[in-house]
Length: 441
Image (tube, rainbow, N blue to C red; front, side, top):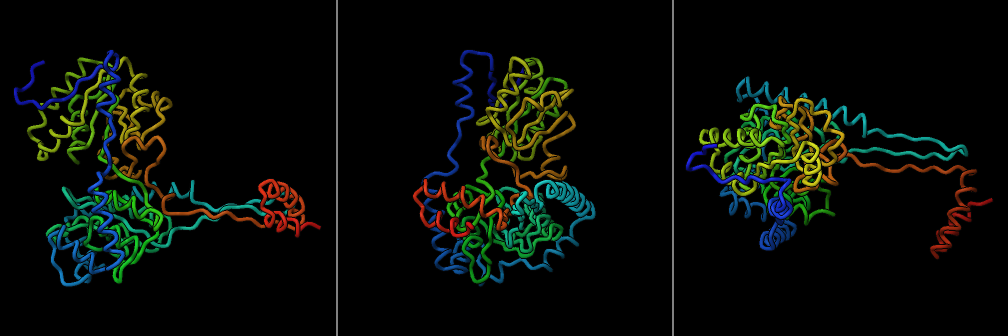
């Protein structure tokens, strides 16, 4: 296969080769989400916000976002401005936002029916047991605003909270230089955001966690951000809840060779263009097909507006991997536990039972990962860096909490009291035992 002389390097690995384990460990070495310097700086910012409140937020906004405003009122984005942004975007953009929002809402309403219901039952002695599901009172959603604007993130974070019954949704979004993205503001209007602030970084996380005179404290913070945001979210956990610590975006494509190579190449680009640290990998048993995808990558790359980012991502973190067969591809996918897993095959459903660990599965050649990012319906906030082994996508369950209900009848207290007494004495907790024994007849 002939490649252009200026073609970027792209790893080619053979999963059946003797050196593959070494190559695998190098490729999938988990990078630290934050270094000590970033963590220390985030901690300093959080302490400052906790101590000085609005004044600290204003100072950080001047330093990091190059935005010099007289007071916090200038950083609050009014409901009138959100509505004006929605009215000002093109009809095509408004329709796209509203259709996407409708699909996201419908999916999460179905999710609420499955996981968000209270229930109860009675034992034969009349004891009542159950579960009470309650939405959180107030949540904060962090919307990234660095290298790109993400109106889709507004929909994906705010709509599940709204569906879950959260009454107060506070959005923070950095606006470097004071530039407010109209699509982000329009998305906030569509999604039902209660209040919005033009602040970002660790200072925004601190304001949401601790509260200031202007920014109300929230019960949970959701949404991805840069390394400082991740470090700050990790540090405020316990003061409030958080969804997850998001790492660089990832896509893993399992291909049987039946999908047009250009489609697969562009799907790899779709994650690589996010960030130089994003990871885009193809697993395929067909060497000739891998060659065709490699050729498509080199042919299509020069026309991409974010070519430099894609090139750096593919060179540093990308790979084209030949596997023995699709079964081995599934085994590797389970080890990797990717954020996005495309099964680009003629019959993708045959492989689903073999796949255990992925943030989201995209089945079939027509299911571009980008459709899931914007408008398919399921949430695009997904576990990264292998955490899909034990984590799930953002959903309505992140915005509700469960309380146990126990009402013991007089008859039930006789049976349960004796059991509790035995166990409490075994743990040498006398008051526990006596509290149960006092209710025995």
